[in-house]
Length: 419
Image (cartoon, rainbow, N blue to C red; front, side):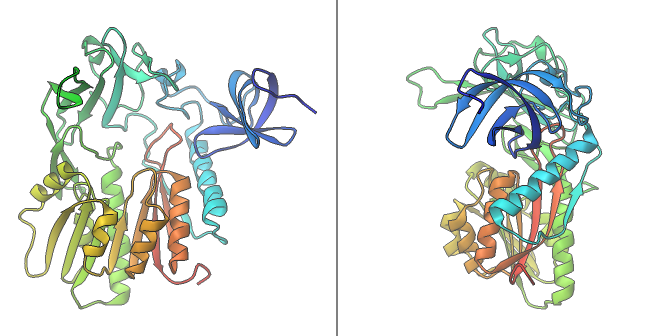
């Protein structure tokens, strides 16, 4: 039997991918996770962590490269940056890996069998898709993407994710050493650079936010023809991929429209937009519903709620109105009117069993659940199923090319999973 304690070196073959972007190999039946290794690779590794049921190892050398490999798309990742961990995977194979990871998580964690139809949406961009980046700074104040599992940064090589103009001349700036730098190019082509640094001791605020270039607000559009625009703080959350928000909104609109046609509702509908941010998905709801509708958007960030209220301040007539609730979702659930439609877009950690169970107990007739982590997404879907719902369809959006991340939208309706 092979001895594989910490510090020992071994050659192994990578069999499949884990959901966090690590390759999985086996040593005498023991699972070994290897960062930057892909299925088909034969690699020399050194064990860095040994647990009862698994081990982690550092990649030392690729002895035989996988057929999945290609030339790096990202110079920063090639030189150790943690930005594009699938940079060396062929784009068409990247999609296959992500679908396999999703199917594995749904089978193991959600315990869905058989799986519902899964479609994959690729935006057709393998580089130059990201409109906002959060950079680290070195001791000299130079900004760049961070090295993997490190506070050090890559300053001399650009990340291929950035849309044109996002990182232009960023290396000429000198920021406060140790600060974070947020760079955004909005939908009007304007760039903002904002530095966030620790405040000196004695200051009431823990952080200092300073606009280095551009404005402290940015303008974002939802829709193909600038159907709705949002003015939000440059530091606020918005989907990183330049086409993601509109694509998700179109999918939401399509599902709700189809449901409305099938159900032929004539009554006033109530929709919940949970973890709604600035209300980016609200236009999709309003456009999809052909009867009167009240949309209740719930968001814990007061800053995002203010931006959403501003965007929808003129929205409202006899047929529809939008109400924002500035509070955590779990606090709001008992205060909202009973929903017909629910959209839930929780953070990466997921909504969790307690919240999903409470939403399901409100008996919506249609739910759309969104997730950017396949494991927590699968666990949330399991909670939906336990609450008396079935997952009808899932769409995987490759919204983070050259990384292990992706986004999923699930269509959920009352019923059992075998319906």
